[in-house]
Image (cartoon, rainbow, N blue to C red; front, top):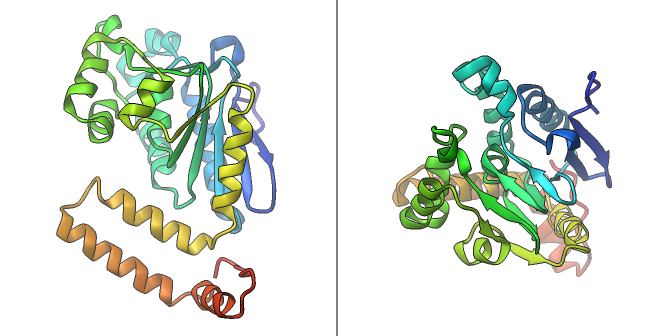
Length: 261
């Protein structure tokens, strides 16, 4: 856990291979300030350094995942609050991690909070979740990735509607748009996120990283280059001890004992 005057991110180990990171500024509706973003990046780096974490669960409060970026910080520091070198480095750490991230989202998920969720790999939404980019109502635009990532996820017209009107969408609409993976009743959304995380974490950390990288490359590369990345990654996977173990376990009709090697 990162120790600060205000512990903005609470880290909890759920198993040898799964860690939960909870946004923790309830009095500020989990508004993402630069301290929280730094803490979150540090926790992701710590999970990577552990060497055996195969999945991260990212969650917030029961009624508010995050209301967005910290408006008071923006009011105080202006554009430098959201455009500074360290903040961009911290966003890059979260985006670049090879560890799959499962978001468990309940209640409000707006602005920077939604931009954070769009960096995750699986999104489990509570039935009460609402997603939005309301920045236009403040006279500016999203600044932590939504103008680029949202249209890649849901297409131009749905993205334009959300960004230009500033109006949110509910969980079922988010599911139909492809913004979330599943919608679960409020009492069980975190349980389901843990179940999905454990399903992921039973696999080789090496293979998970290669798979995540290959899929994410589809958003950056032309098809021919993306297929080349896929071939490179499967070749790398075949060179790992875990691939040999997985194949041996299949023929020996037993569970594989992956060691992330």
